[in-house]
Image (tube, rainbow, N blue to C red; front, side, top):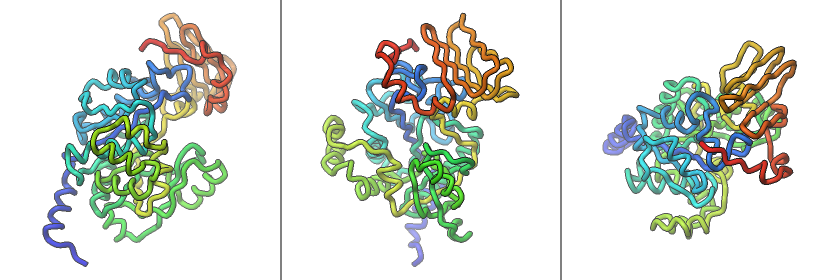
Length: 375
């Protein structure tokens, strides 16, 4: 069937509506995988892990000028909200949505989508992204967001942005697209329909998925406000009707009590029957563990990355993070180590062991485990 003239004009207006785009930055959680650097006063999002600025400040700046700070919502939790707010003074205070405690990213998405629908209208297109991503080519990143916005107007679908999978990463999500024809991809703004979404498979399963042409899920999605709210209602029972009704009337305390914690990936993307994926080639990476910093930071010729006064001698593939004007860390004759030197604490492990520190933190006394360093 053809498109009616008034529908065509409305869609064409949406296609050109770059100025109307909004963004939702998900910034909950302290980031325990970056212990001992992360704390409630210095959550991961405000650490300068991938560059000279805090991760969340980089994320907000990277959206500009396509999406200015006054159209950026940040969803965070009460325990880290002061640190988040201080790191991004350009974002209006009313754009910080503060949960009493982390409710899960699906709940955060629902709250933000309701706010955008109320402020800018249910047809408003917005992207959702995490505060802890690294991007090598910001201009290409913004170009991809524009393309994803066009795909989100082609039909009422959820649009995920994928990246080429170059290695089996069990901690990532994987998106298998249908091949589709050139004309189908053109009609969808360059996007492809999704055959299957798999969140955090085993290493062997991840390798098999890559062999099937799977893309990594970057955690960046684009959708219209009413489309994603309708999809959450259909696919995410953890957000009960009673909870969503409480959200409608601004009763955030009741909303928090009634929702069950679930991620966007598990609660929506893996369940959706109308998901598109758009390939983004802007040098994406997830700053999720200490080991990821070897990809996000500038390295020396031997693959070492350091912050602060760190020296590497006959050493390869190490990460050193030293803080304090009188701190100097020297790594000699070692490979694949993580060394974090803070006033009063030095932490040493292998980069392999540093991928999951929960077992360590469970065994540490609270006086060592809980370190609220001043910002």
